[in-house]
Length: 109
Image (cartoon, rainbow, N blue to C red; front, side, top):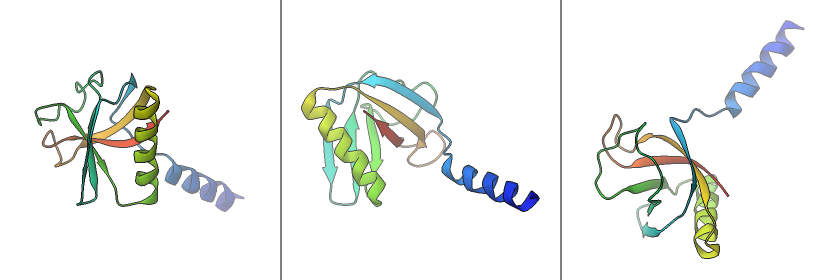
């Protein structure tokens, strides 16, 4: 019985992601798509007080390597086209510490 409980907790913990901050609802204003598997976008009302990333211009970073990240980009495009706000879940800065762009871990429409 102990093993079943341990396996349940182990499985549950693998589904939980840690975010440094959540912001929203915010509007998506600009999108920049790069050939090197990432997208930069702006959400002017998204707070940068927790991560305090040092890149000027308010650009936000979304990696495009996994299917989940590609679906997140689809949500951003849909929200932009429909003029609908989204919630953004951040996880630090792209270069670690406070260096780089804010990194999006999850998008919710």
